[in-house]
Amino acid sequence: MDLPDVVGLIGVICYQIAYAGLQLGRFQQTDVRYIGLNILGPGCLLFSLFFYFNLASFITQVLWISLTAIGLIKILRCRRKTDHTAHADTAPDESPLPLPGAPIRTASYSPEQRQHARPKRSRRARARHRKPSSRH
Image (cartoon, rainbow, N blue to C red):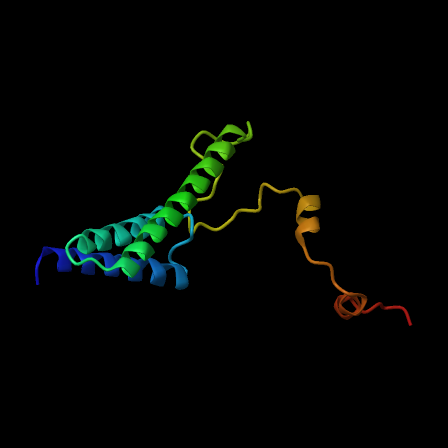
C-alpha cells in the first residue's frame, strides 16, 4: 500500500467518523469537529485522486468540500452576527451561543416566554389534567 492509498483511507475514516458522530448524537452540524472531518475527508480523497483519477469521485469530493465550506461560512456569519448583538447582561465568560452538545438553559427566560413556547393542549387533554374538584 502506497501513500495515496493510505491518505485516501484516512479520508474515508474521516467521513465515517463524521457521519457516525452526527447519527449517534455526538456531533452537531455546527460542531467544529464535524466540519473539520467533512473538510479533511474529501481533501484526503482528492489527494488520492491525483494519483488514481476517477471523474465521478473527483466531482463528488469537490462538491462535498464546496458544500461544507458554504455551511462553514453560514455558521461563522451567524456567530459573528450573534456576537455583535449579544445582550449587555451576558457575563464576560459566558458565550452568547451554547457550545455544541451543551444543554440549552431556559433559566434566563421569563415565565411568559416559557408559556408561549409550550404547545397548547386540547380541551379534552386539559380536562384530563385538571385536579378533581371537592364540590359535588
